Length: 234
Length: 234
Image (cartoon, rainbow over all chains, first blue to last red; front, side, top):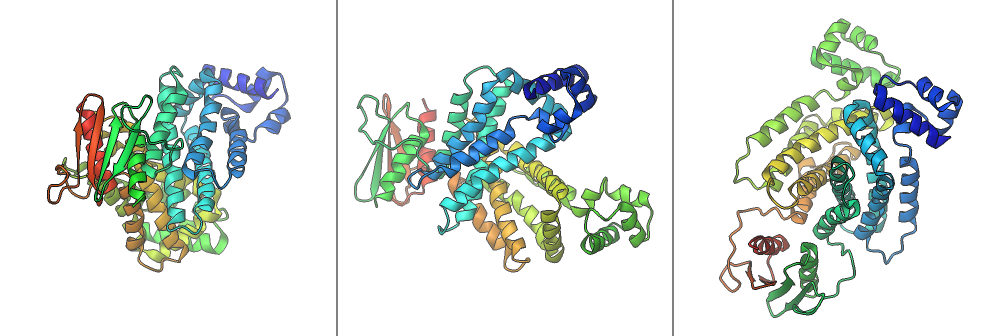
């Protein structure tokens, strides 16, 4: 019944416009009563974003299941990927909603509040992981915000292309940029000398210079990581 | 009259609560008519944030006045400082509003939309500056978001301390963290080979490897910049 309500709502939103559609119209088309609607959705806005509560709960569970050995920046990037997965499960629905949200200021405001809740979930996890470290809360807030911005930049670009192309690859690339900036390695670093098959980058240090040899195709974050590792050995 | 309306509104919000205060109550206390209120403020929410429109306009002007030699990340950090200045102009008012906003969900939603507008202003400036560069829009969105998060982390910490202490120093420190993460060089880069007096980093490329020779003391952004330049030559 929940799915039927969402389907009826979107059919009407597209035909008549969001503002012109009432909850009564939606329940009439779905063939159920008003109380059934409000059992699933607190308001008309909520039927536009039917899966965010579940996704927020999944994200909170995922972060709560983290161990001390999980690299924190990587962990929040993986948590953000849960949101992408929700959008990618149903590309045509996601694209429709994207277009609708762009047109209706009230839905944009609703979306901002949802994005803010995801960001707070990531920031709270990072604050706990960075507790006692210098600037822990500052780093947590900045990194959470950067992760959300990168994810949303990639997600919007995929939605603008009508859900064509590989959403995961686009989001991975965007999150890789954040990881390179804040130093969380996406995989355990395996420095290998240049020329080795499959090698990305390797760093060797002498007295006061660091020499980095990098394959041309290596992603920048990988090279940066190698340099950071080499400098950290100091 | 504008200031009198704000003062009357805040007196009533603190005495009776925000939700329990009507626009009629505010104009009665200020001794003016309803039309005067709506001439200055489109809604009751707007009287809580009377200076954001002016500050947004100042920020837009400040960014529009930028030259090509302004380092973009530094420029958006300076733009964010305009918001802090607005809050610091009247600490007791800012602290009162902070407490009020924490209690009223509608005001928090309003604040989210204001923060989003600041973030878009910064991101649009950065998008223009990064146009044509790899990942220009991604970098713009992520950096704008990080700047806003750092600013707000510092601002909130100052507001929580009841406006005591040096707000500027706290915000400078927070923005410094973002500048260090995103490699905004404080001066124009002057790449020089390793070993040259004063040199930081140099990159040389062969067929399919890039060799970066870096002085150990070189800041990471400088090294990354050299690698990017070398890869861009491809």
